[in-house]
Length: 633
Image (cartoon, rainbow, N blue to C red):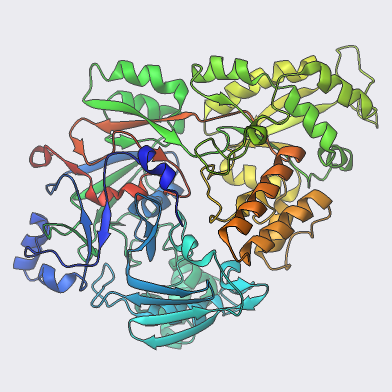
């Protein structure tokens, strides 16, 4: 996959992967050297794979220090997996896929994928990482109905055909299908990779196939579980990093079991990356993740209590943070973002209320809602005029961008909105000027949020006023993220507010999955997405022609034979989304404030803060960040 047009936006930090061993002897952090001398660890050259991944840096770092970050929930220990960005394959600064954990990979027509592990690669506890870890996950987890009732994830299926998995040797494994699976490798490089391997040596003690029955029963009783499968699943959280005993391949490993107010991540002594001088990464000793109310994180950043932070910081905090720089040792940088819309509204096509469901599925109604938003006002009031009024689609930096995609139905035109609403038979109003539904109820929409940022509610206050002008009354209901999502999934929520598409900088060779009904977490059509994700075992079949065409185009893209064919499919997908306004974007091209301690090095001055592709800080490899004053920290 290529996105060379992004290179200038990525920043000045060049991170180039190499499979060549460095010329210098391997070096390690002083703390690990002391453990080697004490006999607690083997020498560094015995801990590293052969070859390690070599990262070429403009500035070779120094060891030491604690990196302070903040999160709003204990569950966000998983963000260290996002930031750590140890992946089978990952993106480089040109957004090309390169080997990371793997030594190499080979593909044949997107149908056959041969993966080769680095010789001598080890888990964080020193146990060998081999193809047994892949076999265990495939045979004993993904295809075990007690652990995975729905079977392997959709990524490992093509039109219902499960992957053929062949163990070639201890270091080589092959996945193949009779039809192309172009999603396979990009998923491995994603912010939440599928983890098609597990530390088998650790998890087997919780599996009925391998554990001694008496010992397993004792573990089940001790943990107060209903059986071995729930016990196994509770221990198997590579992404979440909430089990300190679970070995990892990430640069840092959690040492604190939740719940806690601070999580301490310590260096993985077997981490597989080194710099060009042979220094084993990461440079930083520990990452201290403090859990705070999300609304307090900007204040903590401004007080100099955080070394690296973007999460829970918004443009509304920018002036406040810049003022804080005067008394504290940090900088506030503005990075580009990749979201199709900073904030988007999601009419729920599966809301349980049949009257609202019919309205949300009516294109004219969605158009009226979009035309009733004064995006220019929102840009000036909330984003200091630095954003761009637009709907939720690809960004100008994408080679697929067209003005019509972002501007369709995005102008502020209350007269046209009123015409559309009247034309739908919604021409009756009460004494307050609020329109009436066909059954006589007031046209009142409850817009639900995850309650994690004031920016959404600030935007909704402005939307409230212009929607009321056309006779639509809205209320805002905040809740916790899990509750927010579950209410949408169950049909209790009329409309949700969230960010728009994660990747607005796509190319023709990148998957169009975000623009078609493919995921339950697409809040406009959760049940259609769930149906695809579960291979028809849950959710609903698509019963809207335009949405069905999007899905069919998505499937057609998978088997396209040329880049031009994929580009044509992409443009039709974007046209349909623009015409239908399934989601209602507000503004795009916003900036992301990033707080960086003055002495923290190798963090790009300019970057792209994106979930996928990029894994937020992950694509810049935080294991290469270091403190210039490490000795004093």
